[in-house]
Amino acid sequence: METVYKGALVVVLLVVIFSLGQALYFMMTDKDDDKRTVWALTRRIGLSLLLIGMVALGIWMGWLHPHDVGQ
Image 1 (cartoon, rainbow, N blue to C red):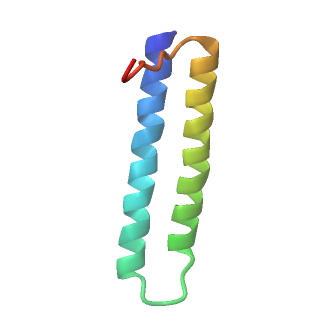
Image 2 (tube, rainbow, N blue to C red):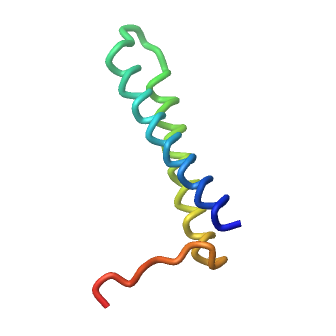
């Protein structure tokens, strides 16, 4: 279960990065009053919140173990 969960986290992170790149591309290429950039950034924010929630859930369930840096 932990491996599948970590894989899902990586996939969501890659989708967030892709959405950010997509928003940058739309911002540079769109000349008219198109909402594609706004939608891509909105999607990225929603996916980032999902990712943070998944990390918190994984730590709470014991599937993810944060390391103790400096201790």
